Image (tube, rainbow, N blue to C red; front, side, top):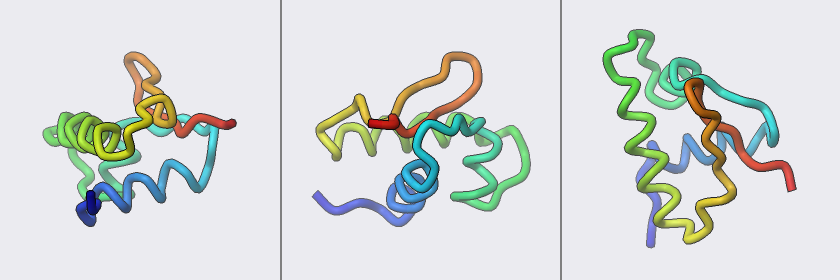
Length: 73
């Protein structure tokens, strides 16, 4: 299944720095170029779609109450 542009940008942002935790706000700014908090759930929805398409949800880890990181394997 093909990735949407935002899903690809999210994957590239996270995977470029394995183990680094990104806040939802940082991801909004990096992927969607938004600088306001109203769209924080946009990140969550995109992560959910990306995990489903990858078939390996363990690669993108949730850091509860903060954001996400790409698992350092």
